[in-house]
Image (cartoon, rainbow, N blue to C red):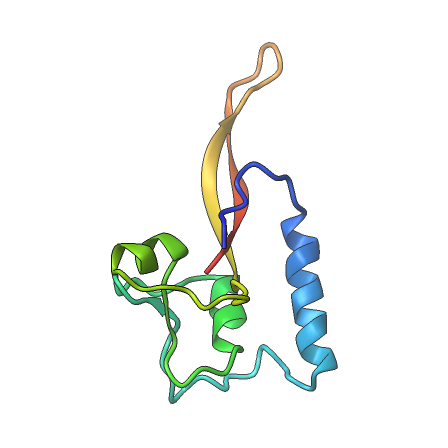
Length: 116
């Protein structure tokens, strides 16, 4: 469950593959099955997830939609089950991109994939 910050991965392709995988299993991820389990949120900060992460996490079918990072679990003194796989979470951040000569710097979105 390591953060994948150094590895370049196509976020769009990975999310698309995840949605196709859910559709193949008979789940329609954009239908709202999570009304009883609540909005996906971080257990520690209580901050709700946004964007595509809502669909990705809510469609997992848990009774409660609270999530932790590996680091947060370790800080709580918890252990992660052997062979447990992380869930996909997309993190967006704005970064300044170098501009060509005579142009201004651009502030563009950049994405990272995390495993929870």
